[in-house]
Amino acid sequence: MKNTPWRFDRLTVYKKLFWPIRIQRPWLCGWGVTLLVVGSTVVLVPEIVASTVGLIDEHNGAFTALASFIIALFTGTIWAINRRQLKHSRVTERAYVSGGVFVQSERLYGDRGNLAPAAQLITLPRSLFISVDNHGKTPAFIHKIAVEVCREIELPDVPQYTDKMLVNISVSPGTVGQLTQIEFDYKDVANMVVYGRVYYSDIFDGQHSSGFIRWILGTPTGDAVEAPSAYLEWD
Image (cartoon, rainbow, N blue to C red):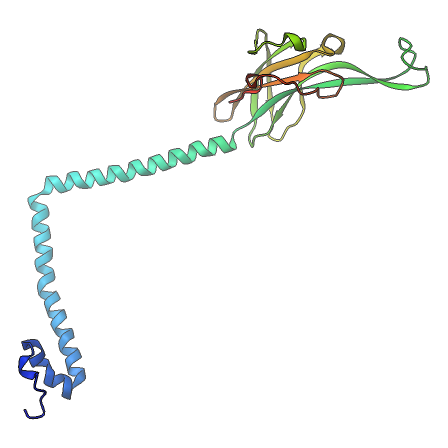
């Protein structure tokens, strides 16, 4: 005991037991600690399991209600996520239709009302068609189109759609300038404002509409008009 450090007598019982082993046989100390932990686990785990099982049996109704609540919460969360994803998908994948006009001209030789020499080829606007575009990713079905014609100074503050014409045409995604059967004689709309609204449905059975307004001043697709935002509203 002379070689024993002077603090040896103040160590805990645990250190007293393992001190000589740690000095003389270090590997025995490691095995001893391992056996102690394993033994404690073997003894305590069954007691913990038994206590837990007993607690569950004693409060069976409460645990069942809690489990049902957690399952319902988890199911509701998944449903909400799927609903948001579906709504987002419909917004990004649906059709987006807009309306417009297209002036169709005819090419002919002169001497028509003394507009040009007989040998000169001229181009004269003949008809105005209502056209549609689909800037969405899926097809659209156009049901009706409302069209109004007036002078620029007579343009109302709020668009008035009194005449809705039946169209019933399908428009593929990416379509630009598809002509409808709505046609006007050009001389009846020249220098006039043409405005209207396209009513259509998408592949998800959503009902939509979009407005358009053009000033017919000689260009093939009309000119822009400074008008209230209500003329161009869409949904």
